[in-house]
Length: 480
Ligand code: ADP
Ligand code: GLC
Image (tube, protein in one colour):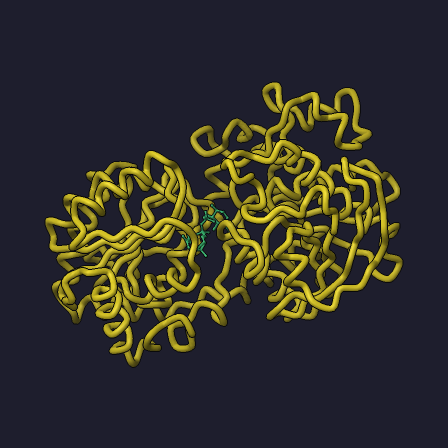
């Protein structure tokens, strides 16, 4: 079965979040199951430079504002998967964030940049671009690839099935209505409402309407988005898709995230040899200028610093963490106000709070290895990957019971501790008080190394590899 994955980012070339991790790992897991999988990516500089052995497939243009568009086929680093790259210099040859300009605002032509991605996907499906390979399923990820199903649907001769994965419904791909004429869509009249969302165009809505199947990245999130609290106004549409909507949990690429073979760590370790984790912790404490003490609970945040991620709750719960003798290391970037809050906290408590703005993959690995607890107090969380990484690194996740966090973290209640099923800490209310209370419980357990070790070992033994989820995706493809 021939499957084309369409996405705007892919680890390790372009990454703003977990989407990139999934787009690198899921296609590889499907290929390992024997499926014929290719990728379609926009030609951002890092992608043009990172995909090797590129051959020209076809030259097109002008279209979507670009004078020339060259479609190339090459190989991804690491996985070796075949990837089509759309080289459209006018649209994509821009460094940095794939969605935002240097001023931190959306690129003004994002509707054209990402419409082209979906358009090329549909025309690969139609066989017009590459006569040697035609996908049977086009699998589009998030709003960036969200027009692919509509472009496929507008060609009645096409039998290609489209699958759309929602990684984050909060980003709906909204554009002014008058941009419609730039999209080359033939959809008119009543069908045009399929793209219209409260006076805007929405690439996300278009995908939810046109894709043959829609899935979200965890079972709980798939249910949550059918409610007004999590649906961003699209809950009615999602409910209307009935059984066409499902939830499939993301997996972890353990070739990237495993403390036994992680080149970023000063010392490797495993569940049976946890001394290395202590070395990672002591080294980081020393590097950050913290008291170098195994007994001090080290909390970590590796996250976008946004309200989605509950980072304001962390700031308000900070006094309680410090009162427990805790230390906090943060890496991330995001909302100016939240960044300012963390900057002030680090200035006031330099001996126990260290904040690093920006993106640093190797440092994120070292932090997750060194910490005792990873804080993920999200207001909503489609899946969340860092809590899964933390579990493998013997770092207990402390999470809010929402989305994929609810599906993966089992609270250390007395009952679950007795059963031996606990792997972290869970709280319910989206309040700093609830977070602080559970953090304080976590610190109590931390003072009992034997019981702590039991929870660590439970998490480290869990298998969230892609095998199961890839099998579910394959079953979804086969069903259509
Ligand atoms: P989201 O995609 O919503 O941001 P996920 O938990 O799914 O959340 O994925 C976040 C990914 O980004 C993880 O791979 C995490 O390690 C990584 N990450 C987040 N912030 C940083 C950062 N500042 N530096 C390096 N990696 C980061
Ligand atoms: C989104 C979500 C995150 C999820 C990731 C990968 O960025 O916010 O929860 O893990 O996509 O699916």
